[in-house]
Structures are given as structure tokens and as C-alpha cells.
Image: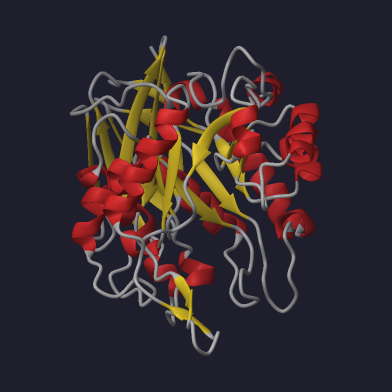
Length: 378
């Protein structure tokens, strides 16, 4: 990435009252989940431009700290939040997390905790309407659990089904979901299931109203002290998300075991450096990502029938960018054809190499879940 693009990405990642991170076409929302406001400058340095959730908040002190740092937040709509309804530091409102999961309940006799049904979808829609009635000017975010993609998920509430999501998605203007294939799935080869991220996003597209925007969550820590995605796997998860239509990313940076660490990403130098570089690259390409996808001009064939290659073509000015990713845990070669790329020099972004599109066609190799980003100037 050029110095100019890095500077631009840092500028775009800075919050200003007249240009929200949620509606600026030059900005891609990159959020961090439920973090202490005092760490906002560290996250900004790492390319984050949004907080999601505030512990037992928002409180006056939390909002003051975030405003001082210039870090906007999507938070719950409590009294303090409504008192700041005219404050642009609040970018949006949110529901409680993962209403589609089994909810914790206490036995009234024994006092012991257990798990009961999910929150009924109709109740989430009703709460959405209440939140909007208090402030129709801001979007409401709903984050769902891994049941969106994982049909084997035992944490879904009793009696719930995929059909419920057709109602849940009407409970937010921004509809997100989380699944952490490496750290969170109980599979012997979890990398074989990284494509579940795309599966869930595609399902959301089928359920959601056209007016809603879809986001998703990204892993980057050993959440329960076990397996942890590698920096390259996190990079793949991010680009897979974007190629499958995600319009905002929420990094889950906690670690719960063997010791609780709220900001575990900040304590992992290698991962932090990789995420920082990745976030800045995403931000530098935000004007392309946020533009309309160009359909029906790209065809791709994979040398392996078991490994599809997914693509997304975008244009800004004289430049077109084709985002691509191999979608399974294996190597393949892709033959790519893009109409109007006849005999063009194709820059492979960030890889210090070029290809030649002969009659609009070129080939490239893909390692497991590898992304290639191709740029052509007309």
C-alpha cells in the first residue's frame, strides 16, 4: 500500500461530527466489541473507527472518554444515551447480544442458573420499534449468534429454528452475526469450516429486507484459551466477509481462559500488527468496497471442483478492482475472465507483481482460503 493510501485510511478512520462512520462512502466501519473506552486511541492506531457496546453503559464517563478520543459508538439506548441523543458520538443503538441463543435463566426455587428458550423473534421486532420511536434518526444494530450458519449449534434455544431468522432480521437496520470457525467450532479440522462465514452472510442476504445492512464478527484471539486463528486466516475471514457482502466488521478481541483478558488483541503483537495492516488496507479500498458491485462481467473456473473461487468486481473512476478468494481449505488454480480487461496489465494489489489479461483472461494460483485483489486502470 502506498504512503498516500495509508494516510488516507487513517484520516477516514477518524470520527467527525459532520461525517458519520456509518454513512460516509469513503469509510468502511471496522469496530471492536465491548471494550474499555480508555483504550480507544490504541484501537484507532490499529485502524478501528467504531466501538460496539459499553459495559453496563453508556455512562457519562464512558461517553466523555470516547468523545475525547473521537471514537463513535453503537450502544444500548438507556437514559444516559437518550440524554445524549443530539451527540454525534453515538452512531447508533443496539439490542442485547445474540437473542437467538438459549438465554440464561435462574430457577426460582434453587437459584441455580440454567438455559431456556431464545428471545422470541417477535419480541426483538417489537423492541426495535420501541428504540426507533425514541430516536428515528439513528440505525439499530442486531447481532445474532452462530446458529445463522452452524446447523449443528447446540446453543440455539429450544424450539427455535432457521425459520425464526426470517423474523429476527426485521429487528434491526444493521443485522450482524458471529461465528468463529477456528476458536469457536468443536471440529477436528476447524479450518475446513472457515467458509461457514460466507454461508451465514449468504443466508442473511436471503432473509433480510433490502433496506437492511449486513455486518459480521471476526475472531482474532484464542477465545477460550484453545485454538487461535493465524494472522493469514484472519485476513482470509475478513476478505471472505467483504466479498460476500458484509458492510461492516466487528472484531471480537476478548480471551476468557485460562485468564480473562478483555483486550487480548492488544497483547498479541504479531496478530495486532497483522490486523493493523489489514484494517488499513480495507480502509484504503473503502470507496471501492462501498460502491455498487458490477455483475455479469466476471467468470471464474477452478482447477479443483471442490474449491470454488468467489469474486466481487468494483469500479471507481478509471480503476476497477476484482476481489477474489479460494473458498475451501485446499490449493487450486483459477482461470479468470473479466469483460473489458482485454490485454490489460493487472496489478495484484499488495503482492508486488503483475499479470497480463490476454483477451481479458489470466490465471493465478490459490493456497487455502487465499485472497488475491486485482486492479486494472482503463
